[in-house]
Image (tube, rainbow, N blue to C red; front, side, top):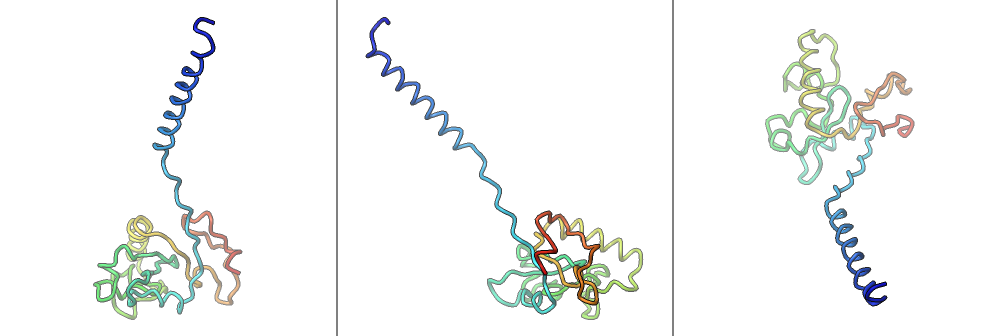
Length: 168
């Protein structure tokens, strides 16, 4: 070996420093892991009513087609005194379909809606609520049959981690 073993130490240290710098650079540019999805839950009417935007600092929830959305980011539309505050804290499916804030329309009941209203409901559900707001749960009317038994035809909206078994 020309130069003897004394020359290997600086070479080894140089390689180690280069490796450490490369490792640090790779760690620095690694994207942060995605946050774990928040669990969704089952809401009764009275539980959903607690999220009506009346209390400062409390999330604001509303349901459409039995799917409960967190609309807190739209506080200027859904918060206390806001134009669409009447829709929150309940399942307002009929009101969304009819584009109505009439208290009689602020219900989950879609009986008697026209084909045009049903299409409008689907469009708004998909293009506004599902596209813009996180799903935090489902209403009991969506998941349960009238006799209280689980609705076997229930299909969660984009929630692969939701299991109806966890709710019973």
